[in-house]
Image (cartoon, rainbow, N blue to C red; front, side):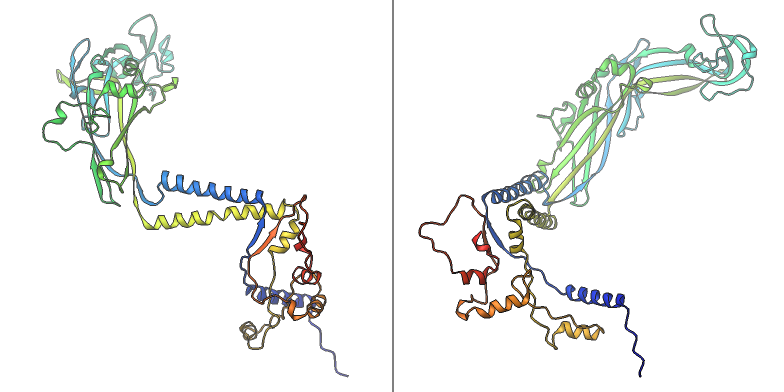
Amino acid sequence: MAAAEPKPPAGAAAVRRLARSCWSAFWDYETPKVIVVRNRQLGVVYRVVQLLILLYFVWYVFIVQKSYQDRETGPESSVITKVKGITSSEHKVWDVEEYVKPPEGGSVFSIITRIEATSSQAQGTCPESSRVTNATCHSDEDCMAGELDMLGNGVRTGRCVPYYHGDSKTCEVFGWCPVEDGASVSQFLGKMAPNFTILIKNSIHYPKFQFSKGNIEMRKDGYLKHCLFDEASHLYCPIFRLGFIVEQAGENFTELARMGGVIGVIINWDCDLDLPASNCNPKYSFRRLDPKHTPASSGYNFRFAKYYMINGSTTRTLIKAYGIRIDVIVHGQAGKFSLIPTIINLATALTSIGVGSFLCDWILLTFMNKNKVYSHKKFDKVCTPQHSPGSWPVTLALVLGQAPPPPCTCSTDPGRPQDEGQSQAQAVPPSRLGPTSAPSEQMVDTPDRGAGPGPGASAPPQQDSTLTDPRGLAQL
């Protein structure tokens, strides 16, 4: 008696069946099925969603955002500035060379409006400033010789000496003496500062579109010598009064000149290059950039010194300057019609209209009455009766060493047994069958609760309704 061959494990057979099913399902084809649902509420929702999507793309995307254009942001820019004017303080007259720092005329510069000057400073010993931590003392024992405070004004000598004024004492230091707090004199330069004029010369270039333009009108009649900026009448005369800039930024000039601050002059070049170049114009705006409501660090100031020789020794005047810093900031964008973004946005618009169908399908199959009926009408499975030995799926499966996919039996109703469907199909006379090429569009009427059959309506034959609609859907 021959030994029985071992049977393959059940798990391996299940894996093979799963692989065969996946292989067969891989070659399935899905196509939409059109079903017309006669429901006024659902139709209103569908058209409203389509209308909103259409308005969004037409008005916002194409008209407001101009998404049909190819765009370039951040133009190449150059800025040249020049300040003119004179002013006076309690002790002298100041000109541009003294109150503008730095003098190169770049996009960032400062106009000095108040100074605290400490004159005749030289290397020597003097009392430390009382503002320095641990500088106050009562005797020499409170001062450590050689100690260097990074926030102080020099190296401590170890002596405790009287302060510049009053009865207090501070530690003596070696450095630039006298220190700033002990001998500084304040001078206000802001008396005539509101009338200072500032020329801001700006030119931009968009390399993608090879477009260049400047903010000065091309005239040869000395136009810039007698004009001031006005947005309506002198847009291309970029000469601004300092008082006008501060006013447009919403600040008080006297307060700003005393404590200092930073004002931004923003030039925006937003150009539609589908229009003539004359429509590409600069737009100016002004605002304060530094946080003026921060008590710990409000205002703007800086220090610098002027050095000179007296009797062979180096002497300097230390100046703590308060002023108005001007930052010229240039930005913008340019756009021009391009076919590629136009096609992309049109395709996006047409695709987005399908959101209405998705929403209505979800409502139809989830919330509507008789949703199971709609689901049965919407989803059908159609398969070929059997695979011929020469068909390409069978051949490909044999080449790959796989069993051919099993033949699929067609049925008009997946939930009904096959034999019942075949017996009913055989019982119907050939004259009752419809044409073989039925249209793909079906029409489903939603049930009306108060509607009934009309007086002249006749009931359809029972045999035909059973053939074309096995579950009686046409009677809903």
